[in-house]
Amino acid sequence: MFYEDIRIGQSTDLGQTEFSREAILAYGKRFDPRIVAQAAAGNARLAASGMHLAAAGMRRLVDTRSALRATLAERGETLPQLGVSPGFKDMRWPYPVHEGDIVSYSVETVSKRETSKPRWGLVTNTFRAVNQREEEVLLFSSAVLIARRQGS
Figure 1: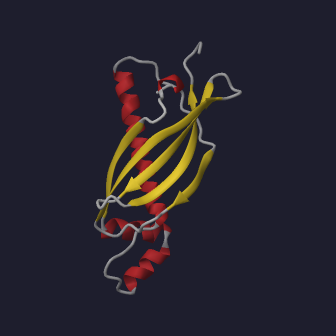
Figure 2 (figure 1 turned 60 degrees about the horizontal axis):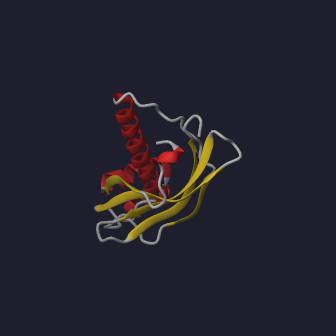
């Protein structure tokens, strides 16, 4: 979507990820030895790494955006140039995610503003993940540069 198409308060469902014991262990073996140590110690119920939770959410975001771009291309619409993100802030994990939890991800636009670059606008979003008990398990604020329509 172009900058002009984005509305403040707009929320997008990014889908769900189930955190199985196998997935938590596979992530731990690659990126977080603490997880492997938990399993070796005989912990009956593993907790996912916070970065695993964030990475799964980013996968959902990329997949959702790719599907939207494919739909626009199929309709013959002009695809906006993809912008960069100047970063995120205030990332927190209020509740742990344990094996068997199903996490739903969403992103909501909270603000937008023009930039000094006439082809780009800056959009700020709240990224949120909740488990099957409706507990917020991940929250952060992010910004991204979004291409403007030509002539805007």
